[in-house]
Image (cartoon, rainbow, N blue to C red; front, side, top):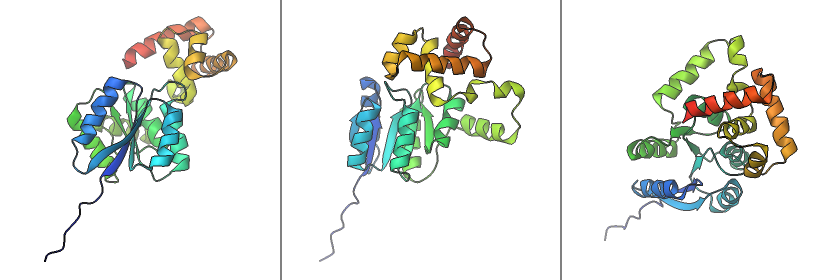
Length: 223
C-alpha cells in the first residue's frame, strides 16, 4: 500500500492590533492563505509579548500604534527575545518614516493599512517565505535617503526624533494635552514634559505653541 503523506503543519501567525474590526479583517485574510493560520491575538504590547513568548508563532502582524507601549517598542522587545521571528508591521501613518524605523528595529516588512486584502496576503506570504516586504515607493525612498548626505534641514526633521518622541508628537497633533498623553502612553507627566522639551530642541521650536501648531499640521499630513 502507498504510504500516507501528511500535510505540513500550518504556519502560525500572531496578530497585534487594538482595533477589533481591523483585527478581525486580518484574521480572515490570514485564514484565506493556504497553509497559514492565526494562533493568537492581542490588543496591547504587554499581552502580545507574553503570548508570543508562549505560542512561538512563525510571523507576527503588528500595528505600530498601540495603547501604552508602542508597536515599535514591542518590535524591539520581540526582536531581542526572538531575533529570528519575522515581524510585519502595519500602520496608517507616514510610510517612508515608519518603514525605515521598523526595518532598523529588526522588522521584516511594512505595509499600510489602506492596502487591500490582496496586497496584505502578498506581504504576509513574502515575509513568511523569508523575504523583506516594502512597497516600491518605500523601498525607493529608503534607498534614496541612504544614497545622499543628510542636509541641515534633514537633520532637524522628525526623522531625528526617537520612537517615543514621535509618539508624543503624533498624540500632540491629535489635540491631546500632556495629561492625556501620559495616560495613553502609561508614562508620567514629567516624562511627557521631557519628551516635548527634546522635540522642541530637535525641531528648533521656541515654545510649546510652535510645537503644537507643527504637530497638528504634521499629523494632518499623515492622515
